[in-house]
Length: 366
Ligand SMILES: *Cc1c(COP(=O)(O)O)cnc(C)c1O
Image 1: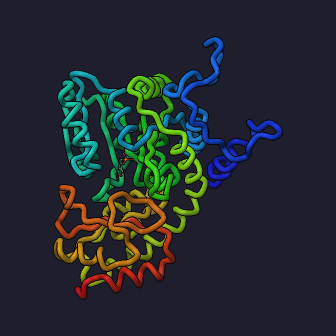
Image 2: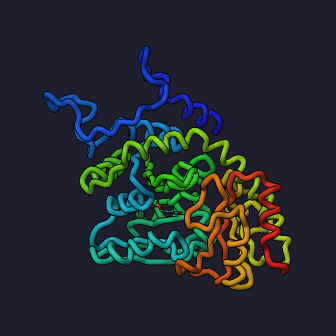
């Protein structure tokens, strides 16, 4: 991993000519000088842009695969699904994963003749995938933080003739690499920890099959879902500090999770980094480099959960996660199948003892 981080930080060096800017330039041009069409590096802003390519070069180092960027995580997920599914296909997706993927599937793909089968993440490990075209996995699942054995589940899905797509948003390629474990495509929201500052949306698809990736790239060009130059540049800058941010966030999350687990007001705590957690096996096996920076826990009811979030000065009351500041929300407000008092906490960069004091002071007595 350290090798990948060092290569990411220096990825432009080998291509620089004397006098070139060391930092990647922001290119916003929609058009390119094109006296004739043969051999031009860039032809039109919907086909490709130098700033996306800088970002894709970084991501390719992290994923060890070809990467295509999109203007949001959902744009990347849509591209992967539209590139691999058609009428008569069967898509297996988690019923407890990121909810917009489910409503995209039921609300749009189903009307194009895709059969959508939902099942809990925990059931994917033993499910029969016969007849599936695409098996879509999310581990740890957002927000429940359940895990699946990626190598074993991918192998079973592929043996059944299915393509495997993994949403790797909660881990990032520094903490988990599904392509190494048998996935065909990885999709991710770089809106979260990779950009890391809650100020830009971005996503990418990664894969090692050139034919599949050409279809994903074609989808971007034809559907016209293209990132902007400024946005790509922001994510490029964010990625340079991803490793140090993750180090702080995951170490703090381990401390906060252990203390929350001991608090009398807190129930059903989930953190894959804790030895007793049902998802710890994915950390123990090395599938996940550590427990990540997301914690799930439940307070007695919706009122107490909202009061805690409102009282804690260190927790932004917002959806999304992976930013510099800690963030938390009551997921039942979006209709996730979780208890009313369930909170997903994204641990940020605040010094851990200050963060813990703020959390402890805001928690109900028990
Ligand atoms: C946020 C998120 C997405 C969607 O990303 P956007 O950039 O908001 O479109 C997809 N999957 C997971 C697991 C997410 O957390």
